Length: 133
Image (cartoon, rainbow, N blue to C red; front, top):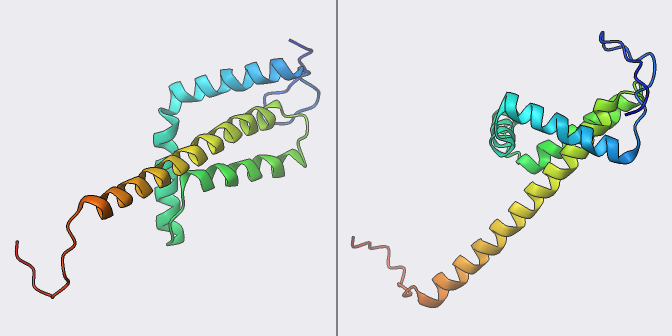
């Protein structure tokens, strides 16, 4: 890796030079470390979205949480451009954003197929207001 001159009190007084492949490797290292510490990423983002939904009194998705966190990391870079963690975290948030976007698209496609099959095979019942169970 490159030169290290980083003070642990959150003030970055130097550089931690890395090329792009080293940055990607660092992003993976951070991801694995946090997975071990905090648990499954899908579960964590779902829990975060549920909490945000309660606080904001509207539905918030895991996808939206990743977008917000990417924005936060970009905002932090304005005052701390040399902090490697901002870049590594943003790489990971981008990967999570894609994961949740594709999962959402898959669910939408599955719902459409289910609705189509239900219309095709379910008997149509007249709505008379009477329900016999």
